[in-house]
Structure formats: C-alpha cells, structure tokens
Length: 387
Image (cartoon, rainbow, N blue to C red; front, side, top):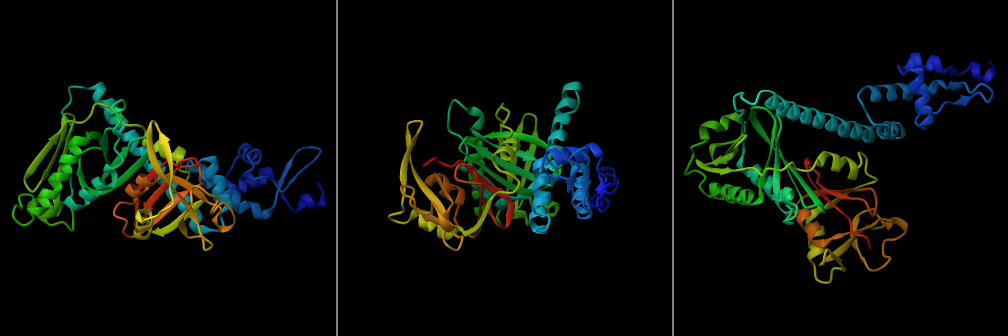
C-alpha cells in the first residue's frame, strides 16, 4: 500500500460505510456516477476518498427506493442544491405512486377475470362542481378529432383514492387536470366520449345557474369539507357506465370501449424529471402578445392543414418573450433558447391566460410543458415545431 492509498478507503471499506455492495460500487464507477479517487494502475483496485462516503450513502438510499440511474446521477450533481434534489425526489415519488395505482387497477381487473360472477363494483365520488368544470375546461381542447383514432376521441377519468385525474390528447398535445374528491370504492378508469364530456360541461353550467333553487345534494356536501350543497357533484362509476348528478339532475354516459394510451410512459419519455429550462411567466401578458396585431408568425403545413407558428425565446434577463420564427432573433447570447410551437395550441394551453404560469422544456426540439405555478397537477404538454 502506498502512502496515498493509506489515506484512502478501499472499495470494501466504502461498501461497509455506505451500504452499497462492492459490485454496486463497481457498477457506479463504470457508469460514471461514482468513480473512485484512485485506481491502482497495476492491480486495477479502486480507492475512495473520505469525502466520497456521503455521496455513496446518498446513492445507496436512492438505489433502495428504485431511483433510475439518470436520476441518481442528477441528484449527485445537484446535491449541494437541496431544492433541485427535492424536486427530483418529488418526481420519483409521483412515479412510485402512479405505479402503485396502476398495480391496484390491474389487480382489480385480474380479480374480475378470476371471478367474473362477483358482485358489481361501484365507485362513488363527491366533489366540487366548479372544480370539475374547471378541470373539464383545462383538458377539453386537447381531445382528438381524427376519426381513424377513436381512442383519442374522449377524456380519460382516472379515479384514485383522493380524487380524479382527467386526461386528453390528440397526439400533438396532452392536457392533464385533477379534482380532489371524497371517494368510496376502488380506483377505476373510464374513457368518456367527447359528446358526453360536452353534455357534462353544459350540465355543470346549468346547475350553477340553479344555485340556491335546487339543493337536493346539500345533505351530501358534508362529505367534502368546504362545499355547500349548490357546489356538489356526485359521480358514480360502474362497469356499465358513468352517472353524474348535479343539483338533482343526472347525466349517464356509456364509456368508450378502448384502452387509452399509457400517458405516464409518454410523459416519462417526453418530459425529463429535471428540465433544463423552468421559466416563470405571466399568462395574461403572453396571451396578449400572442393575440396582438403584427405578432411574428410563420406558416407550416401538417397533414394538409396549414398552421400559424410562433417562437419563444429569452431576453437578456432570462425572461420569456416572443421572437421572430423567420429570423435568427434569440439564436445566441442570453436568448440562446428558441422553440417554435403552434400558436393556436399554445393559446389553448394558456387557457384564460390569468395568473403565473411556468414553461418547462429541455430544448428547441423537445416537448414543452405549460404548468400553473399554484397547481402541480394541471398542465399541458405541446409538441414543438421544427423551424
């Protein structure tokens, strides 16, 4: 052992100190995640510095909870920036929770296949009428209209233990929203046809105009704290259909007989856990800029239909702005980012345009997400346009 090596830890010593196996340490060395401080040029033996113990323990913890290799590497790079690491942990926790919800749903389907004669399972939700209306508005624009893709011609309602998520996509954009609810019954997913979604939205508005005149659900308002009877909606999901009752008015719909695309896999593939850009912006200001006279646009045709395309970039202060999609404005310096997107789709994603929003993306040819700063569960994902 040399004098230098006497001040280092052997791979076995680091394994005992960190909780990682020797083979795991070799793997993380080959992967470039946790290389040793020194490798003996003759024997190939790995030696580690004392300050590598804490990173190795972090790797061990992340490994135990199933963090992917890319996430572990990202956490190590940002370990001196706690906010970044916490964001990675939150994203991984959501993946684990989503996986558990998927497993519960699949097991429920398997049980029904094993014992198809068992009693029909019903799931009942009580939730806010106004929140449900806002969630429908947040996803309705992304419903597909291609007759050759009927699986996209509806809104997926995915009921979990504490609420319901709504999803819609037309391949070029994906919209997501969530409503908290009191849930009685197992998790379940149903794909509502767009016609039923539009009827539901009209019912929610009509019920709002009857507020105070028909309080037939008021006795159920106590199931969800903070709601009065006029703002309560009840949703009952059975294998045969979905019934929504608002202000005593029921609406029943038959779900579409299709399996909605695996949106979680799409999100994981298209949106990384730690986007390169996370840019806060004022929704109303961007909407005003997009609808102003003389906004710089270019035109692109897709599948025989021409669309107006706008480009987003950064100014010298790193703030979001519109740039010329036909020129090189924003191509260098502080405005190195320049991403093009369908103007109509971007306006849809902005919704009413009120409040603080956040744009997330990795670069000009990767999908971008538009999120509400105060609601992590509501966002839209848009595919960029190549300039």
